[in-house]
Length: 104
Ligand SMILES: [Ca+2]
Ligand SMILES: [Ca+2]
Image (cartoon, rainbow, N blue to C red):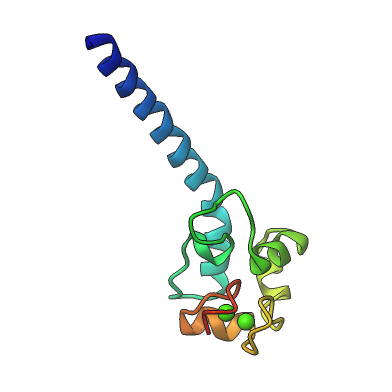
């Protein structure tokens, strides 16, 4: 019983470390968006579907294709990556999701 508890504790620690390192890996990208859109609230779901951070949404794909940089954010600002009728720029400024057509 004690071995199972120790195993589960170690497993939880390793899983936490993986989750934290994955989040930090994406932080430069979120910071690139924040640098262009000062004051914007930018989370993981700007580039990833909710609950699936291994995939990219339409905005994440556009940002990735443009080179994952501050210049990439600027280059795709005028586009409407999720085709909901609102530009990426306007969505980020408004706090809606530029990679989710249901959010506008
Ligand atoms: Ca849009
Ligand atoms: Ca949207």
